[in-house]
Image (cartoon, rainbow, N blue to C red; front, side, top):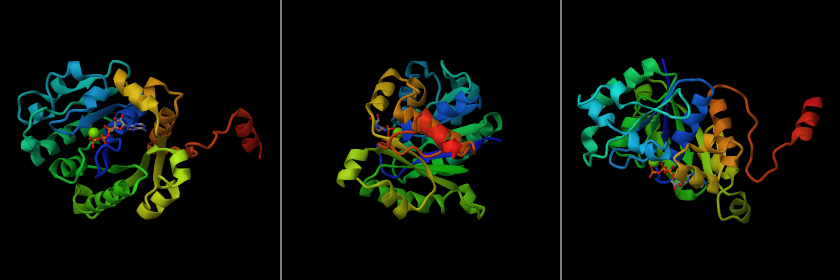
Length: 271
Ligand SMILES: Nc1ncnc2c1ncn2[C@@H]1O[C@H](COP(=O)(O)OP(=O)(O)OP(=O)(O)O)[C@@H](O)[C@H]1O
Ligand SMILES: [Mg+2]
């Protein structure tokens, strides 16, 4: 059975879709089978970020409504062969995703993949609660600013109340992913510092992704940033986050602080 991850936030535009694609690709690069599922009905962004927009024939809603079978709607990534996308529909009907339909599709996917990653729409409306319903793990994507942190706090409350795990008296494993972090602005006091965010949200930290033009560049090419330029700072942050999800212990790289070079690592190991 798959591990089901929901990438969520409350506030819009914080980097959920970027994160879904980047972590999905990074996990798939390790050989695990991964499907990324776009719950953002009407907007359909994940296929763009994945560079698959011209290959969409059937979508999530077609499968729920019985117009296509699940394998017909899944798109295999051209670069990583264990990575698949279930695209969202462009219908304006936000009620096209039904609870029973979502249950069936997520159930089918979780029997065939190692990881099912659900890209949630912004807000706390139906689409977002449907996206988090099956979550084992929730990645709470947060930018270092007050409004984003406040909305993440609300989402944490909803994760503890409106998920299948909550109904069973269990808890969703919630991890904080701080994105668009700019160390210079944080030092100037224009942005919250990592410690401030951690103090307010008190969630385990999955990673810190720096603000970087590499993200925009990768999305213009339709390639998840984690595989576009693996040496770029945001790619490293996402690859490390994926390794942490797999249970590895990986030292946290703080944007703006120099990464230990070979000699530093050697010294630390010697110590
Ligand atoms: N680390 C980053 N550095 C720079 N820009 C980023 C970073 N992460 C995301 N962005 C940019 O922020 C914008 C919003 O990102 P994205 O679409 O992933 O957010 P979202 O949370 O999915 O939005 P929505 O709530 O609308 O679904 C995009 O233009 C994206 O390129
Ligand atoms: Mg999005």
